[in-house]
Every structure is written in structure tokens, then in C-alpha cells.
Image 1 (tube, rainbow over the protein chains, first blue to last red):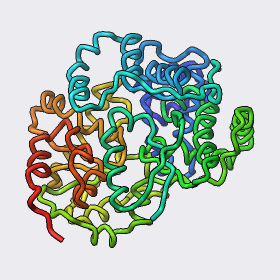
Image 2: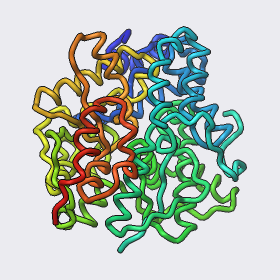
Image 3: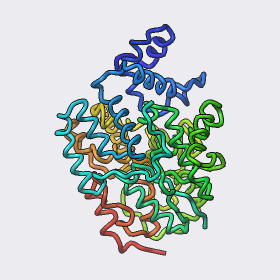
Image 4: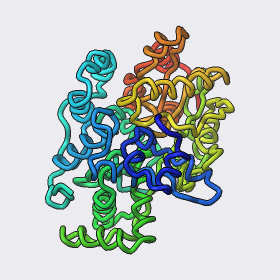
Length: 137
Length: 298
């Protein structure tokens, strides 16, 4: 994490836009909503982080080879095309775009999941795709 | 008894298939009918919402709308992330006119009805509220022969909407398991985040979070964990070999869905509960479930 969450909020308030949007911190937010329910001012910090993530993607300032925004993009792309997520496809595409070598460290986990019938290699599709948002935005 | 429209979500078709199996099996035993929502789509959770919020609400909106169209407005969503996004969509559509307009337009352009009037339910709360601990207690068919269980609730099921259980100190899974004769331990980390998809991205950070959650459960005397979310179960279950290697600790605990444990106590077949799909603690799983068929009473 390059800055703490408090510092990110302070940077946004003081106009350090580029630095905040290019940070890794905003992507490390796993969206657990712990801060949101603890904040005495009831600030929706999780939504603030989501907003920063989207702005970082929109402005192209996100860290390009940092796996988290890449995973988010690939998840998004798979859902845009198929209507449903396929865990196998998303992780594979993320690895190819960031660091293909991690596939060598993942094989054991992949094998465990295959062996227990938890890794279908063929993803599912929605039939009525025109009902879903599809165009790039 | 009652009937629900069922929204399994993408994870229950993959890594979380045992959750799907055990939920269907358990509810069948309890006489609760499930009908899967036809042609459901991704809920628009976490990663999708990080790219495009409006479309994420449209995705969830379509699922809600399909449920309404179907006539049964009780929509059962077992995945914590799906549950949260469906609830969040309802909440934000009601609160922010711009979101309501975008979702409403997308639905009517697809010839779908508005999304209102659907009640999003989670199995934990359905089992607690609709079935109740008393009926679980009376339906027990097998005596528990395993160790103590730490109930792990994770984050998105209890936050920010504390409708399934209390946000900071949920107890309903503990109450249900105890009613089924399964002892649970006091466990302070029960709502700490498992790291979500971090295990797939910044692997060390994610696995570290898993380690803390597992280690504390064992320290409290638990021999297994019970979960309510496919991502929590996956994270806590499949990286234990790595944790053993990096920490040198002998950690090998089974991580179940709470529906697997309840289903077993209520007499269901272990295979129909997906109990062969555990990665960690397989020796204990075999010991506790497969070879103790004799311990049936009632």
C-alpha cells in the first residue's frame, strides 16, 4: 500500500488527483465495508474507493501491471461478453496480462480444484444477451 | 412449505459448487422448494462495480426484474457478494433518482418490468427466521462426531446492510449449528474480511489474511470452520498447503459451508452435500462423515 486510506482521502481533498488515482492503495480495498459501518460521520468510504477506482480506469491512470485493476477489467470483459463470470477465464487472462509466470505457482491450486470438480473449464452464457449492458462505456 | 426463486450466482457454478449442492439438499429435506431464476446473469459484484457502477446496477436490476416477472418475489441469493449487490441496487435505486432512471430505462428497453417488490433473502436468515432453531433441533437425525467449529461470517453478508444478522457480532450461524448438535467456539475474527479476490491478485496479502483467520480459529479450539460465502470458503480452504509451507505450521482444517453441516446433521447423504469437494482437512472429513453412518438416532 503506497498511502494509507486517510492519506488518500486527504490527497483527494487537497487536489492531488493524479497521485491518488495512480496509487495502488485504492485497489487494495477489498470492499468489506468495515470502514463504512465504523465511520462516525457515516461516510460511505467503500463507495469513495469504488469511485476512485472507476476514475482511475476512465482516465487511464491506474497502475498498468498491478494485478487488481487488470483482474477487474478482465472480469468486466468476460461478463460483458458472456453475461456470467467464469473464474478460470478471468484469472487466466489477468495472469497473461500481468505476469504469466504466476501460472506456474497456481497450477497446484488449479489441480486441487479440478480434482474436486470445482473448476469447470467451460463458462456459462446468458441466452438473452441483448438485455444486458454490452457496449463499451 | 415455502418456495423461493433461486439465484445461485457464478461462483456456485464453479469453486462454490458444494454450496449449491448442500443448499439444495438441505432445503429439500426441510420441504422448501427452489426454482432457479431462468437465464440469470452476473450480479455485477465487486470487480464489475469497480469498472462501471451504472451497468452493475443494471445487471442486478435485470435479475430482480426477472424474479418479479416470474411471480415469486422471494429471491434467494446464497453468495454474500451477490446478496450485497442485489440489496445495494434496491437501496440505491430507491435513494438516487439518477440511478433509478438509468436502471429503469435499461429494463424497459429490454421489455422487462420494474424491479421493485422483490425481497432478497439469504439462506442463513431464511433458516433462522423461516425454519427456526427449534425445528432444526427436532429434525436432527445424526449425532455430531466431529470437533468444534468456528463460525466465520465474513464481511459482505453482514455489512453494510445488517439484515441477515448483526454487523459486528453475528450469532445466527452459531445458533443454527448448536441446534443441530454441533458445538461452536467463541470467535472474535468472525467478520474480518478474508481478502476476497486478493488471493488471486496480490497473493501474499490475501493468503496472509486467510492465515490470520484460520490460525485464530484453531487457537480458539476449533477443528473446522463454517462459512456462508463461496469466496470465503475458497480462500480459507485451498491455500492451506501454501500457508503450511510458508509458516511451517501444521494447519490442515476443513472449511465447510454451514449448509453442509446442517444437511449432514439432518441426515442427508454426504455426496449430495458436496462433502467430497473439500481440499483441506480431507482426513478429518472422511473420519467425521463417511465412516460414521452408524451414529443415527431418532
